[in-house]
Length: 279
Length: 305
Image (cartoon, rainbow over all chains, first blue to last red; front, side):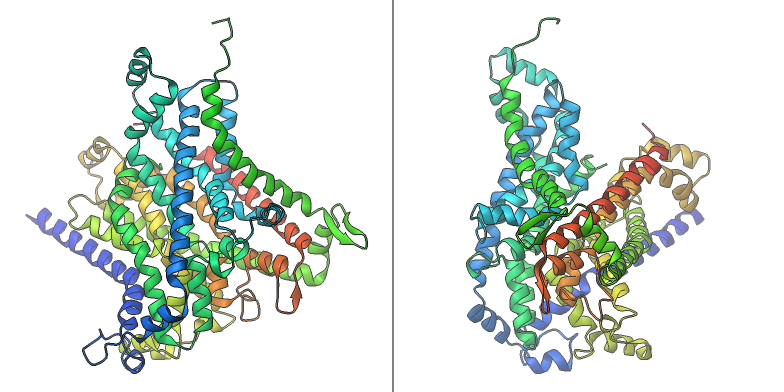
């Protein structure tokens, strides 16, 4: 009896702490989103109030859509993120398969070489990357960003995916070989579908830093035509610092897409992590 | 098996794309940067100067003052993360993993949300909230009777860096939480049950049984935090600009590198000194990772279930 009461008190305390931290985590986002729908006076008079019929105003969103080319920025971000993600997953899975499936000389060494990139940030090579992109005429193209992000994402992808591929049953692959399937067919038809949860985990871990990166868009592709959402909103906010409606609306618009993507993938993410992807 | 097999082309085909892209875009530029730091622009173009750039960086009082300032700030930035982010992350994970906790999925999802936001969003959101003009922070402190505590934290030399570090902690606490949560879930039930049979429950169970088992994960998180912090740039750039004000009190290695390489306002960009700073950062990160791998990771005891 006392045991039961004790555990009820404990779980209440656990809930209290978790709720408190959830509020801390979500509060800033909440404040920005509710205020983006209010008129200027209401933003300052009572920042914590939800918009009412009286204070509701979309002027911020109108300014953003009229001024910044946010649709284009959004499209650029989407192209860069999806293309990089595709290459990271494809090339990463192929390399991971080679490392985990075959025994060949230099296998260990190759694994270490590819894992090096997890520890050393690609940013330290920026100086030379920029010179290389200038030399090849890729500055201010989305291609430059896709190349950099693919290289950036590969080490972690290879590392996680090869851990997972070691878990794919050998019998299955050997059965395929006896049936005369080529190594390529075995990889694409048998192995890839089986490591889908791991691919989703890698996708989330790769996608977030790419979508949110400010450094490389700022340095490699700062032109109007190639701005990403992150860089676009940074520049826009810098110009409209005093127009609070516009700033809040721009922030809300930048939050929304990642939030939706995250909520779509979050179930996979948890499953991937708890399945032992990153231990 | 003495007979060597024919060259297996498919292995090369599988490896080639990843190795080529990785080598061309990551490894070669990294060495290019290291190489660039050994040159400088002389009267007739680029000349080899050996280690003289490093002599300038560490010897010239103006350069070395900026460098040590940035390094010191960076170390403090890292320390705040180690002291706040990781313990809070572990605590949240421990609470989340307690059995029969309702709504764990909701908490997990919600607490991870700041991590997915970009630095631009995070930086501006906090700048607005802490702004004395808007008055959310002073208003909230007023509500609990602590208005006198409010100060423009981001604008004061003494508090700006710590405030930024705490904002960064707020953003990234989800990562240690998730990884530790996964590690805690992977502890087999038998171990916990055995502990309970021996009367080890609650706090002492956490300290004596679970914590030793998740130490390797905490080690990995520490090293990831280290690499991330010594490579940080975005949050400072977004909130304080490339000058890392007030009066360089929030300057860390990333902003110092950016300012040196690209120039800012009155300063002219200098790729060679930029590369020198990048090389110094490379050395620092390598030292840290090496220290971890050889001094700490070897002493961590791993348990197999």
